[in-house]
Length: 317
Image 1 (tube, rainbow, N blue to C red):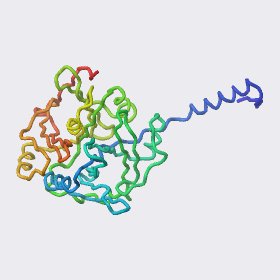
Image 2: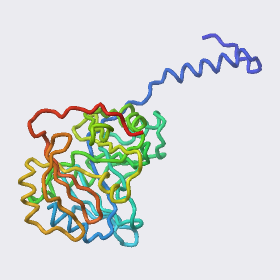
Image 3: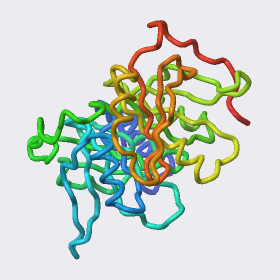
Image 4: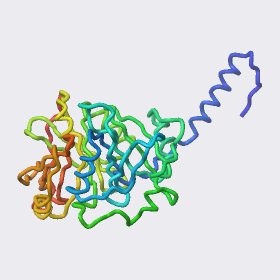
């Protein structure tokens, strides 16, 4: 490199700036850490007592941890589905609003994920937060405004310490297979979840064969997925509650339905009276919690073991 260091010389200044730019370009962009799966789905509830009964007495889960505010009031209740998956119940901020607060994806390095997303132009906080449930976490917003949280679990986190605990035999499922979110602009969502987060599109479905209804995006380092619920006009509040959902995987839906039929359905909750086969060719049973949020029960495999074909229908306008 030959430079005369003449700060008043236009040519010399341009040369120095060019060399600095080349050096910056040589610095590799941060790599994306692994994303293992869905770690949490957080929902607002109107009555925490009723919500707890729904999760405990009806779905058979156990509340594993209650987080409180400085004044002693309840901040959140964690209902454990599996060792690294929870449903978070939050006292509602306002009535008659969307019940979905956020959903969380597990990563093996939250700080590295923060830096990676920042390098891809995503607005991120200045630092990760050290948590009780996690070793570290932070939140961002996807193109549709959904809050996506990235959680890292480590030896000092409650999640790891609680491994094997609070998993009663009464629970109807041991896995949250996916979370469903409303998506208006498919291209933007595909860029965020696909090109940036590394999720892989695995299936497209249409409810009527004319317009695309669903797109599933599997996380890059696990088997869970995020399901896009496509729309061209935002549904009403009840429709939002049905679209924003979490799915509990069950091995045999007929057996699960029989178990639930023998339990008391909490006030306000709804249990579908029949098992259906979805467009994805999997048996499903719909449950609405007391606040209208859909809890989808679904088998892991299609009815005949063959994959459901993807739709070629165009997305909504």
